[in-house]
Amino acid sequence: MISISRRTLLKGSAVVGAFGLGAGLAGPLGKAFAAPDPLLLDARFADAMLDGRNVTKGVMAYTSAGSQVEVSPHGYLPPTIRTQRGKPFAARLINRLDEPTTIHWHGIRLPNAMDGVPFLTQPYVYAGDSFDYAFSPPDAGTFWYHPHCNTLTQIGRGMSGMLIVEDPADPVFDGEVVLNLRDFRLGSDGQFIEQFKARDAAKTGTFGTVRTANWQIDPVEDVPAGGLVRVRIAATDVTRIYNLKLDGGEAVVVALDGQPVASPYPLDLTVVSPGQRLDLVMRAPDGEGQMVRLMDLRPSTPKVVATFRAVGTSLNRSLGDIKPLQPNPPFEADIKGATEIPLVLSATAEQASRDSICGTLGYSFWAINKVPWPGDSADPTAPLAELKLGRTYLLNLENLTPHAHPIHLHGTNFKVLASSKGPVAPLISDTYLVLPDEKVQLAVVADNPGDWVFHCHIIEHQKTGMTGYFRIT
Ligand code: C2O
Ligand code: CU
Image 1: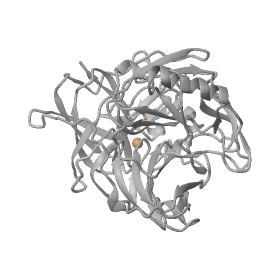
Image 2 (image 1 turned 135 degrees about the horizontal axis):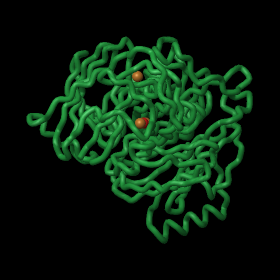
Image 3 (image 1 turned 180 degrees about the vertical axis):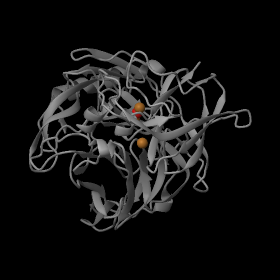
C-alpha cells in the first residue's frame, strides 16, 4: 500500500485548486488524493509479501513517484487510478525496470498512439526512459492498466492496476470496494517459480499457486452495515477464469466490462475471465460484524476470494433503491450495411516463435485464421483485415479449440449479436469469452483509426500465437 506524506498531500491539494479535478489516485480503501498532472507512474522491482508468510523477491510493480512508498506486508498493489469521463487524463510511465515496458489502458477507447503496443503503436520504453500517455476516456466504468511487453512475466509478477473512470452524475453509494483479482506463481518458499509450462500453455494456460484479491489471500473489507456498496472487480490474472457468487449476502450486477447493463440482475455464478470486469452493488448485512463472502466456484471447489464485514449500525437500505448508472455513449452500428469478417481460432502446428525484445515463450501453439502471431516485431504479419473508418463490421468468430478464449479488442468496443450457444444479452464490451466450439458474432464500428490488436487474454495464448490486429483507415 502507498502512504502519502503530509507534504505530498498538501502539494496534491494545491493542484486540485489550480487545475480542477485532475487525475486522482486512491488506494484500495478509496482514500483519494489529487496527483500532479501528469500522474507519475514508476515501473519498478520490489520485494513484497504475497503468500502471507514469505517475502517474495523480484515483484514487478507500479508505484506513484512523489508519494512515499513503504514495504508493506501486503505491498506493491499497483495504485488504483481514478479519473473522470471526458476529462483529460495524463500519466508518465517511468521505467525503472531493467527491461523495456509499455502501458496498455485496457478497455479505454483512446488514440492509437496511446495504446501501448510496441511497434504497432509506440516504441518500447527502455529501462531508464519514460513515456507520456494522455487521453480523455469517453466511457465511464471499471477498467485496468498493464504492460504490453514481456507480458507474461510483467503481469505475472504484479504489473496490473485498476483504472476507474467516474461519471460525477453516477449514483452515490454508501461505500465502494475495488478488487483486483489474480494469482501469483510462487513456490513453497514464496519465490517466483517458472511462469508457465509448455504443456499447459497449449491447453488452458498455467495457473498460479497463490490466489489473491488486492495482493492478499482472502482480504477482509469493511463495509457499512445495511448499506449499498459498489464492488468493482477486475480479473487481471494471466490465466484464471472466475465464476463468482456471494455467500451470506445479496448483490446485483450493474455493469460488465465497464458498460452498464440494461437492467441490474442478481449475481449468480457470473463468469469473469482474464481482462473482464464486473461491477456489483451489494447490500451489506445489518448486523455489526456479519460477513459476506465473495466465492469463486470454478472449476468446482468453492474458494473464498474476499470477505466483506459489516460495520456500524444498519443504514437499512434496500437493493431496490439503486438508481441506474449513467449510460455511456450509445453504440450506433449499421448492421444491415455491415461487412462480415471470418475469424477462426485454432491450434497450430508446434513451432518456435521469433525472438522478440518483448519476450517470447519460444513456442507457437495457437493461431487466428491459421496464422500464428510471430511475436512483437518491426515486421509483423499482415492485419487480419483492413477496416474503413466509419463502417460497421461483423466479426464471425469461431472457436475450433476445446478451450475457452477471452478475446480482447483494443481501441473500440463491440456488441455481442449472436452465439451458437444460445440467446445472448446485447452486451457492449472489449473482451468476450469464446467458449469451446462456440461461434459468436460481434459487431464493430470502425470509429477509431489505427492498428488495433485483437488477442486472447490468456497471456500464454496471446504470446504463443493467438494475436492479430485490425487496421482502421
Ligand atoms: Cu488487456 Cu492487449 O490487452
Ligand atoms: Cu486463449
